[in-house]
Length: 159
Image (cartoon, rainbow, N blue to C red; front, side, top):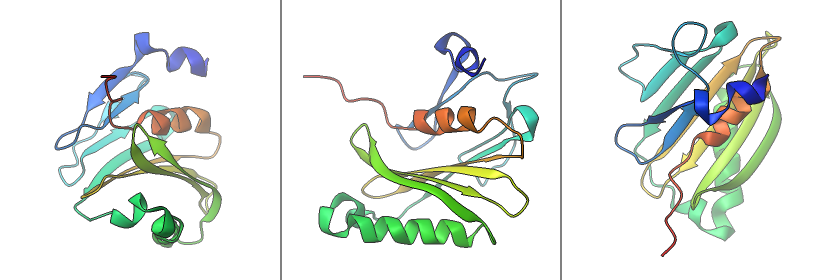
């Protein structure tokens, strides 16, 4: 069923302001993801089962994320800061990867109340985008992971 929900035929590709990054939501409207009016955020949606999605932007240099000798320590500090904003949360997983040429940190945590928070940070050279999806107990964490994975800049065209 998750595969059907994530099918490109039923997905909405959202272009985000002031960046080339996009995110793909399975569906919008009744029974799907509903846009929330949160002017301080780049984007905010409420999904099935009460899941919440927020995307923020910070104008910060991420030079350390682009250098192999400083990358691991830099990412560890980002993860530490994220967990500090979720008091009592336990880190479930952390992975540094690449999202179409941009360093991407994927982080998952479980809160005290049993919710799972799926995070993805895109570490552009001069700014960072952060996507967070909170999925309540019994919610579809696999769908949240798929949405987070879709959060990326577009693929570079072959020359």
